Image (tube, rainbow, N blue to C red; front, side, top):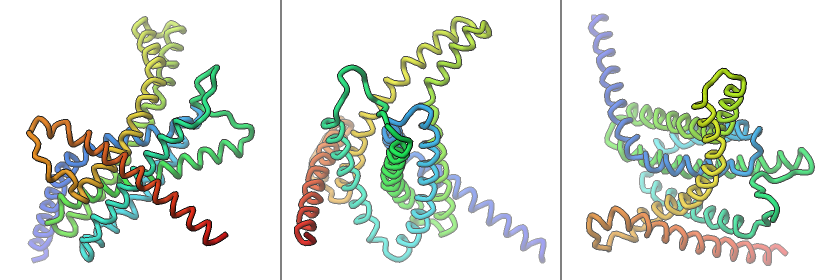
Length: 300
């Protein structure tokens, strides 16, 4: 009797693991686009950090991201079980926040003073405290952005496993959250250290331990790394509007009344959601600014 019970338990566990595997693959496909935006955004968030401090900053953001997941996964399960109607309003608030951050980031880039003699991608600090304050601000901003994107990915995953058992839901959400964090921040770390890889190859070539191919590859990595970071910075800002505008659109169904062809749907939604993101960001900034002025007048 005990043997039969054990076999039944093992069979149930195998079935659950199989369901989790299938659900995780489905969720990974649905969240692939958001993961790309997450990568671009996080690469953009570490821009301006000194080269030797990039990995510690990425590690700090990755730890914050894991803490976000530890909050979001249980919260998603509780909301899904008791107040499922709350998911969409929360996502809408997150989308508006991303649009707001996009406007703030664009405004900062346009108004920041640039040196006429050199490209000041890494700001200079007079004291170590100023550097630490800058890095802390970067980390906090990256973790806030990660929270919104993680919330969207968790919500998408929850939609995939909505009809499954609680164990399957919790397991799938946990797997996607962990893989997302490792994948995104691991890849960001590789991108920001491309120049180190190029320098290493050039050094080994100069020592006669590697051939000319290593020299050319090293030069390519050194030349590509700063350009790639600049491109990712631009893509990261655009991703804020695209993701934020997409969340606003899905929440308010702004584009559902448009009758577009299949070809149009391949291009137009992204452009329209970009526009929605910019407009939503401008409106959010205006509302926040007005609220701040009213608050100052009341408390002054």
